[in-house]
Image (cartoon, rainbow, N blue to C red; front, side):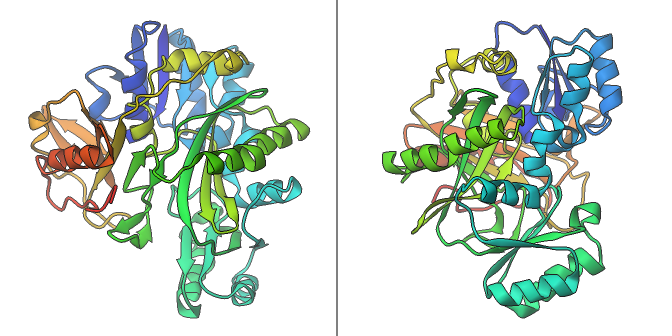
Length: 417
């Protein structure tokens, strides 16, 4: 089989690495890809949001399976376009992708179907949003309604912070169309958990639990990022919590999708908060998480391509997911200043020192210049380690991180603590 993967980050690097292990696959393309996938895949210089060119490329190369890593083409309707032209694609259609593409759509969907989530309101102006913020009290959550690359969520602890966030959204228009409206939500206390599930329209199958560290600095301080590290499995995800997630959230969501005639085939990501009142949904994503994928796929023992084909063909019920019992920890090495302004083009050294079957280095923002690696994004590398328990995996990951250098490198020191 020939496989095309769409995206350029660490998630897509992990997907390419895993798909490369499939006996079904003999050729992999990644559009646009990055320097880290080049040893086992061919990078294609087509932007992830140029869905027409991606379709033409898939046709010209007789691609057997396209896997969409990033959310933008899904929200644009790439799955609809490919299916219309007889091309197999892994990822939900445009209507289904609204669960991620519009925070207000997702919250109203949950409200309609009594899926546990925080109280909320949708506002389309600065004045309206400020009134709602004051009514909710502090702390309060403010979310840009549309896609904002994981950076559209803010927690305001007082009126001054709320004014600053809403000014950024409505007056400075920093999020463009994604900030035409905002969702104001009650702040939920608890521990976060990410649950990713395969869905084929009829059947939903959960993967292992993951914890994502979204804040930029140690101690969960600083601005939200796309993710500074992850671990799996999650300690404290007890059987009774798993049952509550399945009975009150996972299966009701599948039932709701069917009732609303939303054809959902792909990965459905549940961002959860384990509160004193029970498990509640913070958000949906319509694809693999980044960097959650970097700890899930090294633990997955199934052939990923077989699972994906079963989703597309609505035969997911025939699959039984199997997992490595070891723990995995991923530490993200980012450019200094991320998620704000940062410099690119910093030379990366030390990767040649990383040699272990228990370690994976997934490139996120890198480029190859004359045979040498340079930084090319905010999140640069994801260092994933497997260990007999969380402490061993964490220790291995940080030992590897210390071997790698580039100017301004920033990473959290408390992933897995």
